[in-house]
Amino acid sequence: MLSIDTLAGFDITKWNEVLTQSYDRVLIKLLMNRERMEYQKRYAEVVNTR
View 1: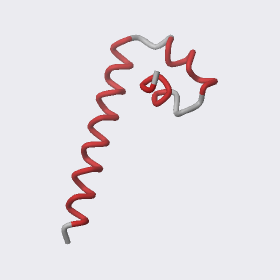
View 2: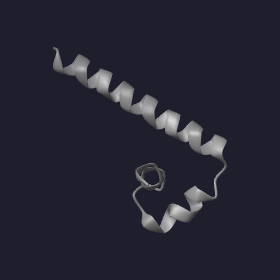
View 3: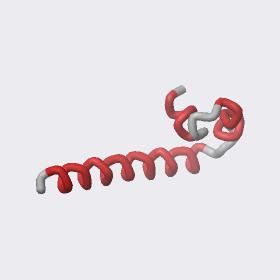
View 4: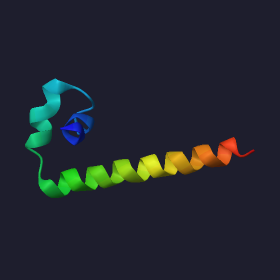
């Protein structure tokens, strides 16, 4: 449910839009979100070590 909510931009009215997407499209978006979070975490670590 958290993944659906995240993909819907935390907007419950968009859940059906997420649920009608193809699996490959959803998986790609989830992978992109994970990569973005990892990048932001690494960036924050670099900035905080200065």
